[in-house]
Length: 337
Ligand SMILES: Nc1nc2c(ncn2[C@@H]2O[C@H](COP(=O)(O)OP(=O)(O)OP(=O)(O)O)[C@@H](O)[C@H]2O)c(=O)[nH]1
Image 1 (cartoon, rainbow, N blue to C red):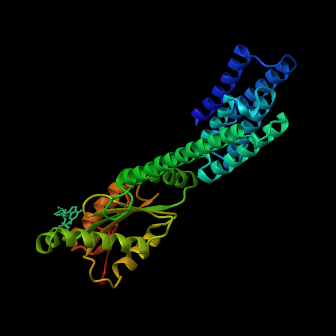
Image 2: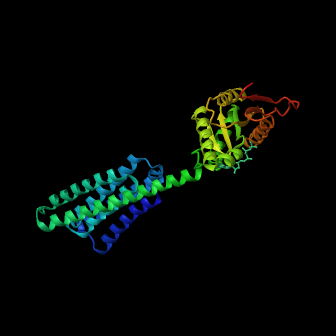
Image 3: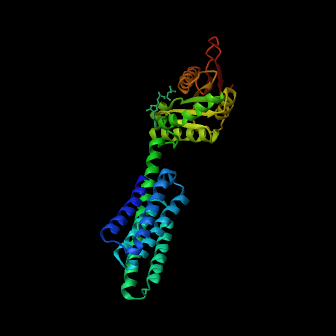
C-alpha cells in the first residue's frame, strides 16, 4: 500500500518539476503551486490516517477521484488536453487498478474521457478536429489497456496469495487445518477462555487399524477412510470448533465454550454414527480448566487419554483424569456400552 502513496508523490514531483523547468503562465503560477501543496497535504494526511492501509474502498475511491480532479485542474491551467501531460492520468488509472478492481478502473477511464472532453471545451479547441480526436482516442485506449492489465495482474496475484495461504494452512487430503494453522488459531481462543475462565475442550482422535487397511486394501482406500472420518468430524462439530489433521491418522479438535460433558456428548454421537465405512477411532479429551491451564498441557492430557482409550480396546472416548483425582478414575465410553 505504501506504493500507492509513492504514486501520488511521484505525481506531485512531476508537477513541481514541470512548474520549475517549463513554468506556467505568471498569473496562474501561484494558484498552481498552492493547489499542488494542498494536494500533497491531502496525500500526506491520508497516508497518516492509513486510508490505504485500511483498504476501505470508498476512501480509496475518493483518493483516485481527487487525483483525477487535481490532474484535470493542472492541465486546465497549463497546456490543456492536447499536450503530453495528459498521460499523467495514467497514474490515477494505475492507482485505481491496484486498489479498486477492473470495474471501478474502467469507470474511471470513462470519467477521465469526460475530463478530457471538458478540457477541450474549456480551451475552446474543437474535439472533432482529427488530431484532437485521434489523440484522445489513443490516450483512452492506452488507459483502458493499462487499467485492465494492471487490474488483471493484481487479481491474479491476490488469487495466488489466497491459494498459497490455503496451501500453507490446509491439509490437502481432508481440507482441514494443518497443525501449524491450528496452533495459530488456538492462541486467541485460549487467551479469551483464560481471561473469562470459560471452559474449552481439546480432543485427540486416532484411527484404529489404518495400517491394516492400507496393507489389505491399499493406500487409496486408506486415504478414502481418512477423508470419510474428516467429513464425519465436520458434520458433528460446530462452525466455531477448530478441526485439524494432526498427523497421518490423528485428528485434533478444539471445542470453545465446551466442558467435558458437552465434549463427550458430541463424541458419543460421533461414535454412534451409523456410517460403518468409518473404521474404529480412539478418542481422548481434556478440558480447561480442570485438566490444565494451557492448550499445550491439555493437548498432552488428551493425547494420553487417547492412548488409554486405545489400550482399552479402542473405539471409545476417554476423558483425562483430574490432576488431583486418585488414579483409576478414568471414564471410558465405548461405541457399544
Ligand atoms: N492411506 C494413508 N495412510 C497413511 C497416511 N498417513 C499415514 N498413513 C499410514 O497410517 C498408518 C498409521 O499407523 P499406526 O500409527 O500404526 O496406526 P494404526 O494402524 O491405525 O494403528 P493404531 O493407531 O495402533 O490403532 C501407517 O501405516 C501410515 O503409513 C495417509 O495420508 N494416507
